[in-house]
Image 1 (cartoon, rainbow, N blue to C red):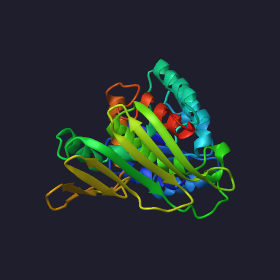
Image 2 (image 1 turned 120 degrees about the horizontal axis):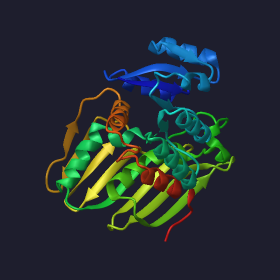
Image 3 (image 1 turned 90 degrees about the horizontal axis):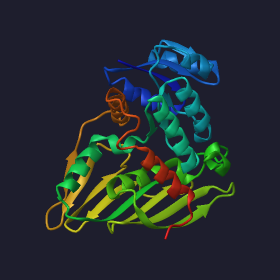
Length: 314
């Protein structure tokens, strides 16, 4: 049994809990928030045995194996260090930390302690993307030529850290990270060229970023992320023999396959929580004695933040 504690008791932590409750070999035994009342409410809602108003007090538990960090991103670095220094494995919500130098320093600390550190990016772990990767490997749509992914929405208020560039706010940081991670997982990390068009808001963060990437394999990708402009949310993979289209790709249990010359096919999978699979992967990495995930590795997290914070490559 893997005993997990949660730092941060907001909406994303509630969705994480729904995934954790589907797993018999994982148990959330504690949660902590800066306001004890909030942690108590969260614990009562999900039948968690203990709530804390102090992160350090929760981390002092000997029966706690790992921690899920679900706080705003500008808090992540200090909280990851705190957890690692208390000898806990860590899975931390995206966006991870502010730059690739910090990514390296934190992974170095985790490896020195023999602990796993993993950025939580639920999308690439779902059965949907397992099935799609298999199709690509089997050349069902031929050689992949072009990737197109978009995750945008209109945030309900501008009075929030998500609009503050000094606190890792902005559309690409908040949600553009999802299609970017999918693109990197499919095309690899060797980006030879990158260009951006950015729409800034009054606070100085990006309402919308449109990123164009070229990879060493010749694949080109278009990635959009936004918090001020809502477009069609999807990810589509174009090959020379067909395409795979995934609407609402970060959580969908179905996708569309079109092999050119044939009728489009709808493929449906069954799963309740998209968070279940990243938790399952994280637990397996711990069981296998790994210090980083083969999917959400140091190299992957480093490349993601490099691309988000760099104006252009090539």
